[in-house]
Length: 248
Image (cartoon, rainbow, N blue to C red; front, side, top):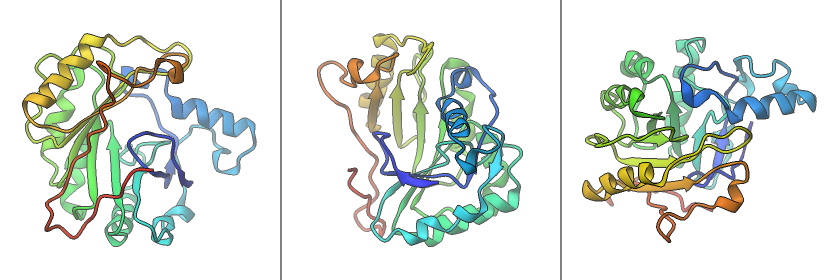
């Protein structure tokens, strides 16, 4: 439930919750659902419930056991702010993240409105980054919700990018990740959609990370945009005690 990750913008994943439910078009071909069903077929005990939301209580303290600083993607196989995750469990997860101050935790949700509801009950140290997913212009309202959260670093995962988002509002956003959908039945992403967002980031000095073009064979399509890799990351003030780990 905590392991090295092949995701380009993180080092490791930590899944105190597994399973989820679909709430918007970006969820249609969910990679986590496909993986959960595969692990269920392999009789992996943590996925005995398939993709039904399940609390993995015994994994809560795992990040405290990792001594080397890491970037940790929280709940790559779920959404910590899913409506069926108890408030108390979320509070406990945040307490672990606060205590494990040598790591950076990247928390990503499609439910930023719940983050707002709970934000006053949660600690917001500088090592907890908070992000939301936006797949097209219909879901930019999630960005408005994210801006209300008192995290030092707020980020967007615009993956899969399913349509143009002209004049993306980047005020109050510290990092933007963009990527195309991968796997069976993946929906194509147009280069102009990506360039629109990249150019907004350049104009307003927001770090831009291009993850992939996606498709059925994402290793073949690669992750170059206009001839280069875009691997920009947010930074904290030099005086801050939190150091950002170097990605492996």
